[in-house]
Length: 120
Image (tube, rainbow, N blue to C red; front, side, top):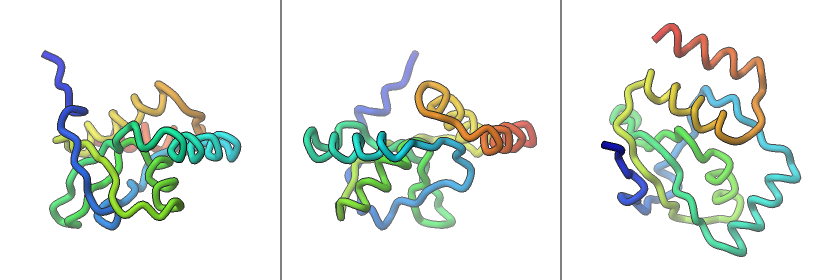
């Protein structure tokens, strides 16, 4: 059975969300401007995918860093998130899957992410 985590969206303080340290995805400046305008015009339509890190007591982004950074630029106090129950290997794999489905990849960072996944 396929899970549908997008039905369990949480609205959390943006201060409780942090970026991961391994995402190789990059977005060109013109696309970031489009993302910003889309959020202004259409609202925040896609939640940020996270895991909860109990040691940090923060939600760590798996997918949605650029939406998150745009929300920070727009001075949003709360953002919608989805929380997955993934270990580090699943998190790395999910990041690769989300990035490959869309986006432009920095090859060196992509290779580093795959190396970390293999090490897991």
